[in-house]
Image (cartoon, rainbow, N blue to C red; front, side, top):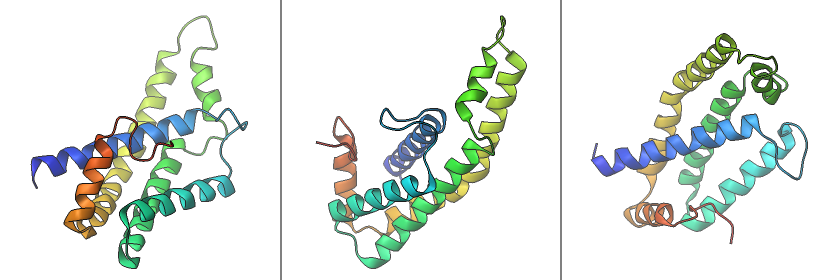
Length: 155
């Protein structure tokens, strides 16, 4: 695999983990609590539509993009885990007069295991999607990633 492809895939993979982590541990300013399944489906639909229109994807490519979205959603769900309130988990670490190192380490290990378990499927789905793009679409992805705000930014 060429170095620039590795760097691109690792960048996208790293960004997906960061977004998943931030989404899992925070809530938007316009809502309270974790995202509902309906809201996640809405956000996912908008993301797929936006990427599809920016890259002018055909049906086979849209299918691969949806498979990638499925894998990212599965990884996010595994990262969040079974807890109802991820923020409360983090807050519990600093709730006492001492930082709960054991609890923090355990939480970190759980999240790391979840990412490691689902990473191969995410990488494969990303590779399948990227490899399905024609050279012009691949170039468009690289150009959009080079923009300062990122290629999914608004405005």
